[in-house]
Image (cartoon, rainbow, N blue to C red; front, side, top):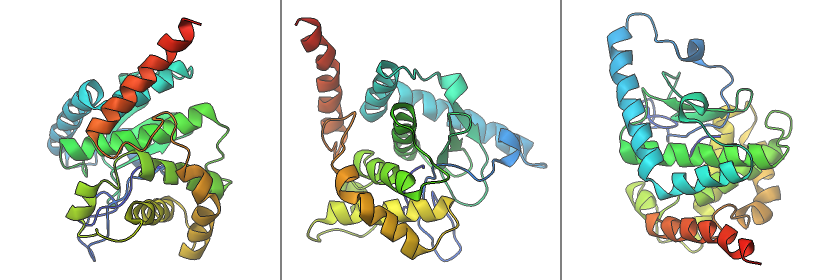
Amino acid sequence: MAGAPDQRQTGPVAGEQLQQPQVSCQVFPERLAQGNPQQGFFSSFITHNQKCQQMLLKTVETNPYVKLLLDAMKRSGCAVNKERHFSCEDCNGNVSGGFDASTSQIVLCQNNIRNQAHMSRVVTHELIHAFDHCRAHVHWFTNVRHLACSEVRAANLSGDCSLVNEIFRLRFGLKQHHQTCVRDRAILSILAVRNISKEVAEKAVDEVFESCFNDHEPFGRIPHNEKYARYAHRDFQNRDRYYSNI
C-alpha cells in the first residue's frame, strides 16, 4: 500500500509519460525476480542498491515517524528486522514502494526513490500498512474496503499530505484540503495496485473514510510534520511509563 502520488515525480513514485503522479503501492501483483537486477544493468543495480540501503539506514535511525512505527510494531508483537523486513529492489513502472503481505516485507523501489526525504515518506507509508497488517485481519486482496481503510490511514498519517508536499504539487488553499488530499491519494494508491474502476475505488474510500481518517493509531494525532511526529513518539513512549506505575 505504499505511498501516494506526487506530481513532481516521474511515475506513481515518478514517470515521464503524461506526468502521472507517483504512488507508493501496498502490494505488488508481482516482484521483479524477487529483487534480482535486470540483465545488463548490474553495475547500475549495485549503485542503486547501495544508495537505497544507506538511505534506509538513515531513515530507520533518525526519522521520528519511522521510529514511532517501529516501536509500535515491536509492542504489538511484530518486531521489524531491517534485513528481513525491508528489501531494496528494482521495480516495474513508477511505483516507489509497496508492502508485500505474503512475506510481510516492505519493498523499496531503489530505481525510483529519489532522495532521503522521499525514502522517509515511502518507509513511513509502508510501515503504516505493516502495522495494520500486524494488528488486524486485513484482507488485502479480497476486500477493497480493507485496502481503502489502510490507504486512507497511510495518506493521513505518513506526511504524504503535509503542507510542504502539497505546495510542491501546486495544490493548496482549499477548505478541508487535508481531507481532500488524503481521499485523492488513497484512491490513486488503490488504482495503482488493483485492476478496478475509479468509481469502485472512490466508493470504497468514501465508505470507510470517516472511521479510518479518525483512526490515528499508533500516533494518537495527525503528525503534520516531523515536529508533531516527535511529540507523538514521546507520548507513545510515555504510555507504558504511565500504566507501569498503576
